[in-house]
Image (cartoon, one colour):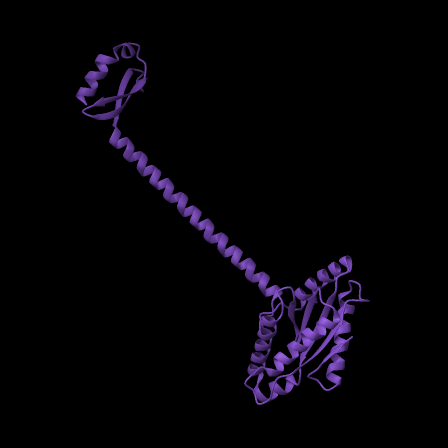
Length: 257
């Protein structure tokens, strides 16, 4: 400190004589020092000079400590924000899934299917494209529940949903309509091709081993979009009438309107 004081006195006499404050950086013994001279009046109104020095190492140490602390706080805030955002987005997705999916089979539910079908009908009417809709009902499903219990009945619903979903095209839509009834949409499909498609589904189900005493069979009603316009209720009613014919005609068959 004595060396620094002597250097300041010798080198900055001009500034000292003017009683001015100043700040300089000087090098002593291979180290840089920040030297601040404060020329002020104290509480007794007497002129006073304060010489404050900080070595380069101490300065860097303080700066590094502050930088590390600020960086750590920034990273912590960023991580907390990302976690909160992830939790929010996950909850949003779960809420959306609960609103759109059937909790048992994992298929989309009636409400979501209605929205998709309505848009597909509007597109088909506008661009004059072919569109088929079918309804599928498990034959004698009440007997399955009564004989094997509702747990086995639920497993039949789940397996059937997986079986049909894996068989259908990515452009098709398959949903649980309610109970043992399912519904499907076949875009860009004529009635003739639609009948062939659902006949394959009927055969696929009848040939599948559901691990019951008797095979599981289904009745299917199918219709094409002709006189329904974009009225989803009329479209579904037509397929439902075809389904009624299939069930009345002996079940395990496909009927078309």
